[in-house]
Image 1 (cartoon, rainbow, N blue to C red):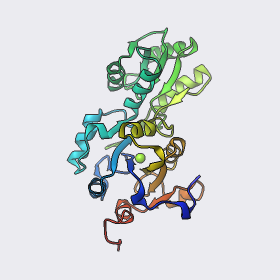
Image 2: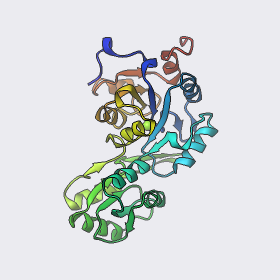
Image 3: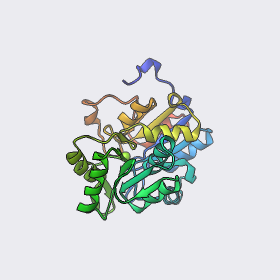
Image 4: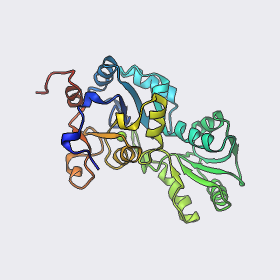
Length: 274
Ligand SMILES: [Mg+2]
């Protein structure tokens, strides 16, 4: 439920600001207008800032480097990806667990870096799914057997598509859908948005409570439910996936911004637009 307008705090009252990446701070072709100014203004105000992204193709250091190139001076630890959050989720629950991965080399590396034991065949404690460019019948068959044999089914995210410079490609839902159809149940946990895991991990990293945090994102389908599930406020920017027309049908965000310049103005650090 959105907050009633009279209870909605001034934007500047939030201690921490989380930003979605694709369609909010960046496009495949470059930065979203106003992104560098917003990040700079929040830094000047002494706010905690982090980026939370379902992106599982690039490492945190690669993402941080891209953001710096676009004028957003963010450190690696201020970038929280669904891959990192997934590794921590499993390592916290079962240190050294056996994990069967259907996903990218980057996902495998992150799981191994958290002390988890990668296995290529059942038995496994966890099956973790992401985007896998080397997907095969054999890999899916081994993953399905592992889940049917008792492994927990954990999805990094369930995005249908990933945006690229040359158009969209199928996302992690491709693997989840195939496995789900065979094992007869959806994933036991979805770490990325619309699940709460990524947002909670970012709050933990920044040492802030969800109630003093706002997520800013462009999707009513993934960002808004993630914010609600984690207990943060949600501000929609109309620079990406969701439009004003979608608002009528959806759970209403706590804030709606035409673009990042309007958010900057709402922070009280810029002159009124127009
Ligand atoms: Mg987005």
